[in-house]
Length: 363
Image 1 (cartoon, helix red, strand yellow):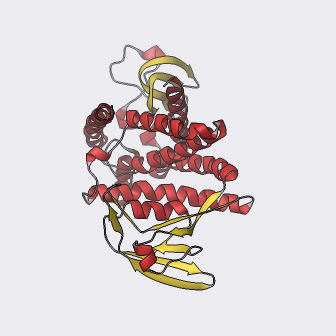
Image 2 (tube, one colour):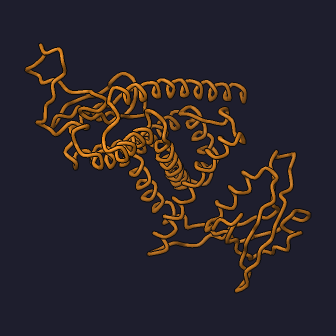
Image 3 (cartoon, helix red, strand yellow):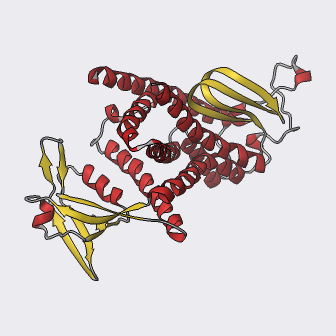
């Protein structure tokens, strides 16, 4: 369990630091004063001030914050002006967030999720460089399942699923896992010939899911341009997963009970370490790096949702400003983000309860 906690802190910490660093660096480039750069939540463990910014490491490694001067009407008082009741602006270390042009603000807010995608790509270079990539090549056909009836054979290369281009084994796997019994159109290449087949996945009561009826996967070594290409495709694959999950959540195919928070992530890390441990420390490290790719992409995607208190919600207000030619009154935007933050905290408590309930149910 100690190892799990350490790995969790490292993985979550790297992902959160990347996100907040994106906000921080682009804010500095645009001359915005950063009041606080915090990693974690809860009580402060370490803190110091440099260049007008307070750097804080907090107890709970489950989040972070990058606070800007003037954001939601927050200003830093000058040390020599403590008697003034109204907060005073200080441009010694940069301008207030709401005083720079809208595109600078958009870039600063967007940089957090964007840096998560950059981190995912850099980490994918490590994973793909050491492990190679798995292509969607049919390995074997299960007798009596739709793939056999459709005429697929070992060696066929899957190129499209339901009209969507696929490059990796995982893309086919996730499409099959998310299928709820609807017909699937499979396009594949056999030698130089292209074929298309429609299959109706077969339900397995043992696994409580639908199967096409084949195993796929052919591992290739990636170097040079292939390393860059397949690392980018790896990030593309991980980007598709949360987007499809969100669509299924909206459509009612998933419920809020399927959501998982920090506790659930820690449990998954623990189970993954136990599964991979027999294959050696290098396999554990690469698996955890791959897990960080998944987590980083998910954090980036979720933060871009146009919901109050998230980066996407702030971007939405700024885009409204671009269209209107003037900003939404700060007090109104502040109220919306505050309500959104409260609801977000309530959701986190709900997810935490679900994670703990699942642990007890399994125990």
